[in-house]
Length: 470
Image 1 (cartoon, rainbow, N blue to C red):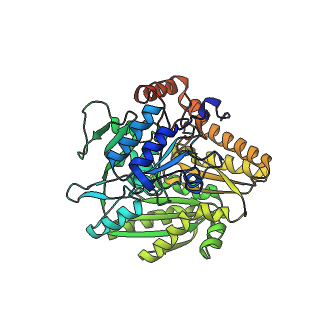
Image 2: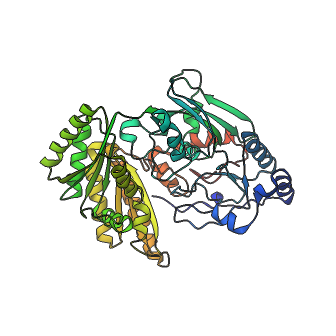
Image 3: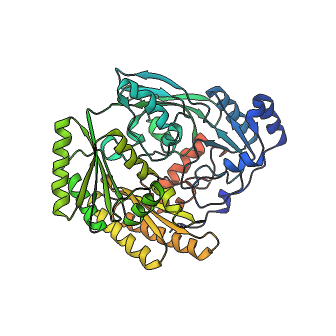
């Protein structure tokens, strides 16, 4: 079960005036204690309400990041890296106070190596910014978590998204990093080479560490040629189970689909209202195919045949860039669209990922439980890789609704673990899923994670209180 956060996770640490004075002297107006700015940097998309950080510092270089971290280490003050602020599990909340280190001004694309299909960027570059630059060279970066997140934040949370079924996650697409350690030292991990057997894989250690081991200041990433042909389609089904069974067959037959997204009827209803669309309000698969003209046509026909056998109807195509963009924009708006269906609500979201053969069971049981509860909800999912998200819409003024949502979330995660899945496919642990991490990995594995954390960050200044408490 996901227990309440231990007191040690939220024990406040005072930022001494001497440290604030040193930061103000170095950064001038780029160091702020203004309440509005602190509150902006002390809130993400999670349902937690936590006091804001003590100050916000806008760094513009790796050397400035190292300066801030070294000072923080000297005073044992927390540092919380900040990107787009779009995390869902409380990753950027200043649960122990400290410095919010905003990296969004480190937003330069440093190097594009088209011949090697690699790119080197600063952490504040967003995925849309990178793809706008790469498009001129006929290239793209495929990891698409929905929000226009920063690439540093995407690496820190091991993001994936709609293209993961074809192109993998950040884990597979980060080749090397530059990182400021907890002591303020600048180190490099990995290289631009496609593989290496040189020592410990520090790159993979940092990817997914949620800012608890260091601050990412530079990334080398894989990029890909834009496909010759791209086609998207929507197909509607009589039930969620039929849509999921279609997905399972697509994957098990080895059809190289690029994107395969599920929206339940509630999500379709929400995006129709938000984006002024007229999609049929039924369970829907939104799919995309990449490849040559002949390859895309072959993939599409195979998927149509599978869908038809399972009751799929209204197989509508979007072959122009404008039509595809309209569909995917609506998909990415699903979360915000759903919030508008219950004005003033907050959303408790959870995501799990299971082996593809167990996906139908996992979703069906989760739907049955939430419908019995009476809470409004919505489902979206990167179902091509067994990952789905369930959002429970709650009234923050009614504590019982939050308790119900958390209980449903716990049941959904426990089910995923029984089905040999994971408590989070892409949201990460943050504050919200610390108890679930123990359930999944076991006390011994979490103890090993703590040992790594203490070895690399003995004063526990790097985003403390996340993943696990010390």
